[in-house]
Length: 448
Image (cartoon, rainbow, N blue to C red; front, side, top):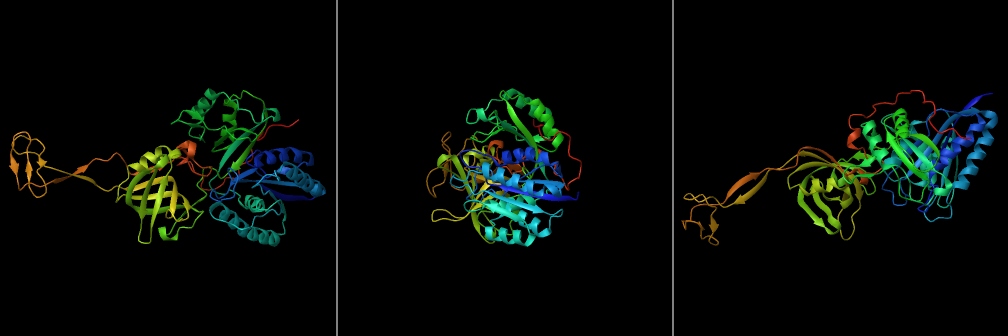
C-alpha cells in the first residue's frame, strides 16, 4: 500500500480556565498508533509572536508529521478532527481553535516564510486561508477561527536551524486543579547534573522551581534542553510525588530568540513586534510606581522609551545603572504609543556596547589643610571651614567615577523570560543547522 505524508497542525484549543494544546497532541499520538503511522519527527511545539493581543498563555501551536498507509487516511482525519473538537474549549471567551491537515512531503518556501512571519509579526486569517487554499490543505476552526493561523504556522516551521527540545509530563485527571506535587530538591539536583544542556529549570535568584506551571492546565512539569536524550535523562532525575499520566518529547523553537528581528532604526519600529534595536541612552533611568525602571534611547530617527519591569529582576538593576551617553542594544517587545506615553520597548535583554564616562563635579581641597572647601555663595569664592582660608580663584574640579557596569549582554531573570527568549545558558550551544538524526527510542511514554 502506498505511503503518504501528512502534517496535522493544531492551535488555540486551551483557555485561561484549563486545557492545553500540547496535551491534545500527546493524546492524538496515542490514538494514531492503531493506524501504524510512522512519525517523521518529534511533535513540534512552535511558539508564535508573544505580543499578539489575543493570545492565550504561551501562544504555542503544535504539529504532528508522519507517514501512513493510504487506506487509513479517512480514519486518521476523522480521529484527529473528533479529538480536536472534543478537546477544544470552544465555549470559553478568547478561545479560537484551529486545525489544518496538509498532505505533502515537502514544505514550500512560501509556507516557511508564512510561519516565520507568525513568530515575529501580526498575520491575518485572510493570509492564512489564502495560503491554505493555494496549498490544497484542509482546515477547520471555531469562533473567530484564528487558531487556523497558528495551526498552519506550526506545519511550516520545520526547525531546520536552531531549536531545542522539551519533555512535558502530564497529570492524571483526578489531580487537575490541585497544587502540583514534585520533589523540589530533585529538580535542583537535576539542573546541577544536566547543565548547561538543560535550561530554565530553576530561578537561582529566588531559589524556586520554575518547571512546574501554576495554572489549571494538565501539565505537571516541562524540562527544556538541547537534545531529546538530555531531556529524557533529566526526566529520570526528577521525582514526581503524584502520578504521571503520560509524557512526550517535543522539538521546539523555545529559547532560540526566534521572535526577535533587527530593527533598521528606532523610527521604523512596528507595534506588536519584538526587536533588536541600537541606540544611545538619552534620558537617565527613573523608577516609576511598582518599581519599574524607565529610560530612553535615541538614534538619528527617533527617541523611544525602554522599560525594565519589576519582575525582570537583575535586568532592572542593570537598567538603573545606565547613564546618558551609553551605547546599547536592546531586545524586547514594541508597544505602540498612547496618549500618556511614547513608543516603548519592554525589555528582555540589554547588550552594553560602550559606556560613557561618569563624571562628578566637586570643590577642590584646601591647599593648607587638605580639607574639602565650601562655597561662600554664588561668585563669592570658596573657604575652608577647618582653617578659615578663603580662595576666590579656585574652581570646581571634574573627576571620573568608576562604574560597576561592564560591557556585555544582560538577560532578564529566569522567572520572567518568555518561552522564546534565549537564556544565557544557551549562548554557544545554538544549532547552525538541523542534523537529521534518528529519533530516540522511547520519545513518549508507552500507552496501554
